[in-house]
Image 1: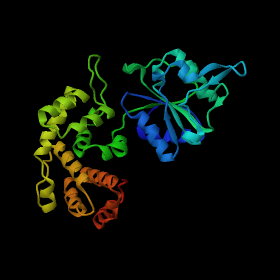
Image 2 (image 1 turned 90 degrees about the vertical axis):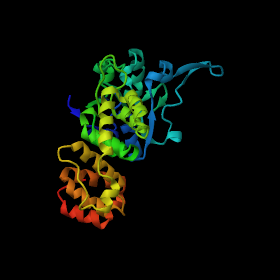
Image 3 (image 1 turned 60 degrees about the vertical axis):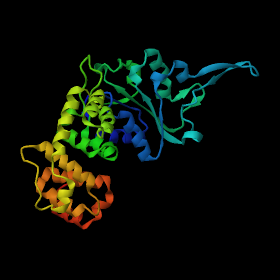
Image 4 (image 1 turned 90 degrees about the horizontal axis):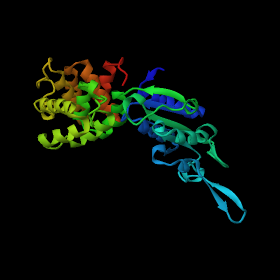
Length: 334
């Protein structure tokens, strides 16, 4: 089966929702699969329920039959966290997260919800579509093989980590520019599966958590970050941060964008660090000098700065300096 990027997976979620087709995304732990489903639901203006089978018993999924003293019959009661049109809206996505991490009995219980979209007399609202996410069986993340009966109820996609997707859809809004610059400099460290004896490893989830500690003093910072992403990745980040500290400052650039020092050509880490700093610092007021300096860094870094700056603040695109840059770079798609 072809492996797709997170950007393509996002488009698949939208297409499958619109066609009322259950989709299952499978990939490494910590990639942001669940967050992508939730983000799509927000974008479409529909409801979202994260229905984690691993936290439930079969009765929590399939419901329970309870005697009715008045009728002398058994009544079927269903879980309260299933979609309710009045409470949750007429349309939405119910995500069976970590579906391949549960026992076969629980998978069997989920059949009806996914294929027939019913439990007893209860029926899923017509506008709700069941979807799923799970980790690779080979990644030792509690995943196990799905029964063929359950697997055949989904359209499947294997998903690969996607740094630029994470930057655009989460990183720029939630993480410091130094962290984003480091991952662009060392994209191979965006996601690294751990060895059997390792607990901490790099992933979209763990880097996001690690970057919260960038403002701590160096010794403590290194220990905290290593606890999230592992020793090797933490050491590389620490080295990057030390290089960044010696780079040209924002004050120097704003004061003399045409003449102040440039990063050494043989040290791309410095160029990535400066690019991230400038993208984060660009406003309508500072756009002109930053764009002036960016043009001296080279096309790769110039485009990164322009892309990230206008992603953070759409109004920058309406400045005369940005407009002039866009005219000069019409072939660039931001």
